[in-house]
Every structure is written in structure tokens, then in C-alpha cells.
Image (cartoon, rainbow, N blue to C red; front, top):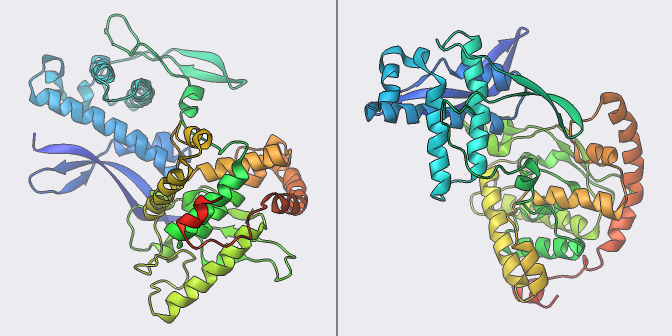
Length: 437
């Protein structure tokens, strides 16, 4: 087969309401293997109508499209191998797509689970995506097979939801499934979301390791732990985004979180790793370690400027090597380097080391730790935490009321958190110094 399906994400300029709007779009494309030419495929409309229209994140859109791509490439491969089940598609194309083709693909994935190549959750996740894909194809009259979809009302997280029953789970189709279906909670439980009861000491140790191993993002890591920022929100910060307290410590310490990719990453075609989910003003705890880091970070930027190394004067986080704004992927790589050294230092402390290596975790753990500081150290309610974190799933009226309460309580909380960070003022210049903590 001389072509294959691929996924592309690009920035597209559109005219909406008489204005030029630039936004990221996800496309399902066909690539000619001989010429390398890529053509957008009409099935991209599935992504637009099912996900983009419902404002799902770029990452979610890409993940869905990747699964459709894998399914369609599986069909091409089976067709090339002259599998009888798929031969009709060579003549009829997508119009000839039937449930049996999806059932064969799910069974193929199940075999991969048995071989230890993928997790069982991948099969059920793919099934949910295929159900939506097939239903959309039916609604658009793109396929000839008329499928009747059954729906059930189920209670999910205390709310009534309409669930589409999978047409692939049918004895006649012979779809094979993995033995165990993991719950959503079980999937979440595989990741670590906090450092535990000793979180403050461990947070400060992590930040001090970052000062030595990755000084150009140490402040960003501090913002994640003490402000709940996502990775994409950190790398999108401008120098002008920071509102600092005065020298005597009074006043706000806030960050104006905006999607600044046009200023920082104008040449990047894909900015999923630099995505800002919600623009907002985010309060940062005025703890000594963060204030000191902020001061050092400004001094470091000034030194780089004097040497003529800064390539973008607006960026708050620049590489000390290239002077360019740090991308989301580069931030993740630096964070991972810090994590590895952090765990190396902790290894003699068997209890902490075992806990912190029991599950996977990365940059998002800062957001989890920030949340638990609010909940366990300050006793904030779930709705207050929702506002403080910059989440969206809260009613507008309630959001406004809680926002006022959170703003007031933030000022009171600053002093509580500051007193808890007992080792923040110590100076460390090497990894060996940190081992003695």
C-alpha cells in the first residue's frame, strides 16, 4: 500500500464575525509514501463535529484522531494482506465499513493485551472512540450498514448520564475483550498526585535540587508547587506576567496566565505542550523560597541579557544554553532530570523513596500538591479549591461568590504556609549539601 493515514495539527487562520482568528486544528490526513505529499481527509469532519465543537482540549482531539488513524491503517494492512473480511472495502471504501471490521480491530487489540504489549484499558478506550466514530458515520449516511444504537441512563459520579451501549459487544460478532476492565478510579490510582504528609520538606528539597540541576526552570517548578500551575501555563509566562509584592512583603504575588504562543513560539506549528487550558490571574503563596527564587531568576535573566544570549526579551523562562524560550517538551525533560536526582538523594530514606517510586508522576504533581496544601493544611472546601486552581467546572454565580472568599483567604493562608516552610531560607550550592538535610 503506497499511502497511510496520519494525524496533523496546525494553526489555521479563519474569519469569524468579520475578524481574523488563529486557532489550532486537528486533521486526519492521507500521506503518499512515495511522494511524501500529505492530503487532508474528509473524515476530519468527525473531529470537528464531535470534539472541536464541544471545546475538548487539543490533546484529547489528537488522542481521538490517533485512535481512528490506527484503526484505518489496520484496515489498510488487512486489505493489503487480502483478508477476506476486509476485501469489500477495497471497492466500496468507507461506505462499506461494517461493525465486523471494528470488532476485528478490538479483538486484535485484545491479543496485544495478552502479549503484554498494551494495557487492557486501551481496548475499552478505543471501543468508546469507535462507537462515537461509527455512530457519526451512520448519522452522516457515510456507511451502508444501518446500526441501531441502544442507550441507557446510568449514574456516573452521582449524576444521571446517557450511555451508548457498544454495538461491538455482540455474540454474533465474536468480539474478544480482555478479562479485566479497569475503572476510571483505578486508572487514576496508578499515578502519584502528592508527596504525602511530609510534602513541604520534600517540595522544598525538590526545588533546591532544581536550582542546581535545572536553574532555568527552578522558579517554574516553585510556581507549580505553590501556585498549582500546569506545565503549559508555566512556559507561557512573560516577564510582564508577574506581579510581585513589595520589598517589605506586602501586596499581591500573582501571575497573569495567558496563551502567549504568538509572542513566545511563533514558529511552532504544534503547541499542544504549551497549551493554556484556562486564562486567569493566579495567586502564588508568598513563601520565602519562592520569593528568593524569583529574585535570583531575575538576576540570572539580567546576566544572560548582558552577555547577549537572550533571544526573546519577553520570555520569563529562557534556556541558559540557547537563550530561546523554553518549550513544554524542554521543560518536561529538565523536570525529569531534577526528579531523577531528587530520587537519587532520597534513596537512603527507604520510606520516602519507596512511596515516591511506587507510582508514576511528572510535572502535574505540582498541581496535586498545591491542591492538597489547600485541602489538608488550610481546610478549604472543594468549591474554593476549584476556583483557586483555575478549574472551569463550577457554576458562574457560585464561582463569583467563592472567588471573593478565596481572595480573602489567600491573604490569610500566605502566612500559614510561610511559617510551615521552615528550611526555606537555607542556602545550598551543591547536591552534597542537600544530602545532609
